[in-house]
Length: 362
Image (tube, rainbow, N blue to C red):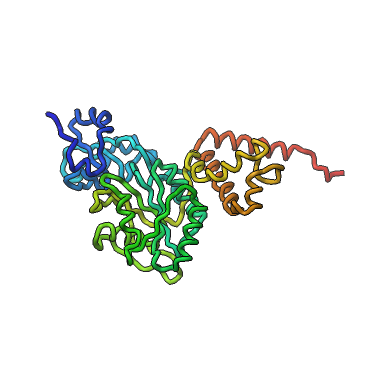
């Protein structure tokens, strides 16, 4: 029996012919393609294009995918069996892109926020939330994901024209090469421009802190009050109104993954996103006199010269160093061999220190 998978409903979910080869052996087993549209603690919600289904992983598959990055995330494509509710997820198809951060907490491990995305919409309120250092983190993760980042300056109606212009300059300095769009769900400013970006079958992820207006923005794009909203708290901090990640279908035919507010955003990067996010610093570094310039007190440092000239902010260079150290630390701690080597070097240093004679003794 031939199973038809190339249906208009699946294509509207972002399916493409490029996955046909990977899907073929699964079709031969009688499985069907579906996309993860919501993620909860105990289960997933997947869509086959026609219907949404409550779904769980087959036990053997969960044991096989015990490493967190390989477990399904919203936006993933999976293969499901023909069963009653809940349907059983039998396989997870490969990802072409993923927005990944360091998992909140102490453990060093990645957390996939959204998979198979084309756009990363970084929402930040013009007043009260715009933080260049946090934007650098978002931009780095967005570039790393393989998606195209776009910064949304939300609540643009709450500030004067000159304040909005200053915000655009701040964003351009923190995220060079990233387009900026000012939007307001009250006046409608920027919504038409955003709708033109969100073309049919395109998948975007919407990220940002709590209280920046993400749910209001999703409602505006949906044309109704589908998601709950809440005012910002008296202390200026946002409220979590979105409690789980969910893929919603927009009237334009685009797909938008809404996410809860992020108060903790540590990098999980192999350096590609970092290089793209700090391309301006690396371009300056190429003109330093020494190839291994540390951008400290070395003579002929083009980076320090740019800081002295006012074309590069000292805070941006400090952030460059901080994020690079953070990535190196995560890479070391997540690699058992590298961590063991570091521990051996540390023990050797301690032994050498304790074996040295105390020069204070007579």
